[in-house]
Image (cartoon, rainbow, N blue to C red; front, top):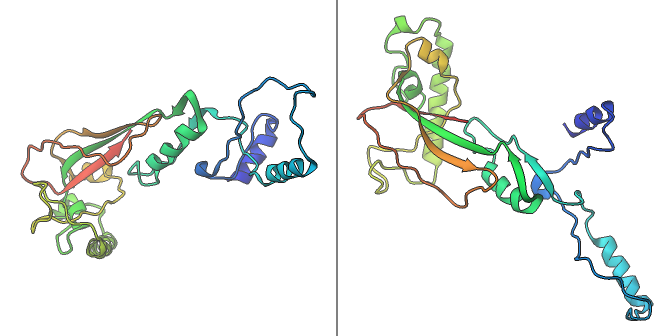
Length: 242
């Protein structure tokens, strides 16, 4: 990608204005500038030996070459996945903003919000519960084939293995630790519009904001959001972000 970016820059005649650096943001080195001082006269300057000057020259050569002459005015980021935070968005911004961005600089996009919505969907539930029928009403599942059933069975087996291997205790609805009727639930990346169109997904309420982040001031540590649920039964939680 970096090589392609360089070709595009050259093709547009912008090589004197745009510099492509093949590094992660946390690997970028910003030049450090000592505070400006009034120049000393030759008479007032302290005498230095040749050995001292030589040591200073060697130390300067060993300093890493900076990638940026100064901190930047704008940071543009696109390290998002379908769950928003899965590609290390927050740790990356916690490093990049204070180290690479000038005071008063801007981050694009500026904010991000995760929404959650409870739904009833046997198809989604069957991904995490082996043996549960994915389609209770065959007439509503026009276009679903045996191949889909095999894929769901495979996903369910992989999920069961992942839950068994996790070292985290299951989440309990009462917040008091593990419980016999609760378990860790895997996360799947799905396009659910087709399920809704075929009557295989029913929303149980409106989507509500769960977490919101100012990317120019990324939060530190973990965060927990409590949402009141007005239903006793749901099969999945949809998460989307903006």
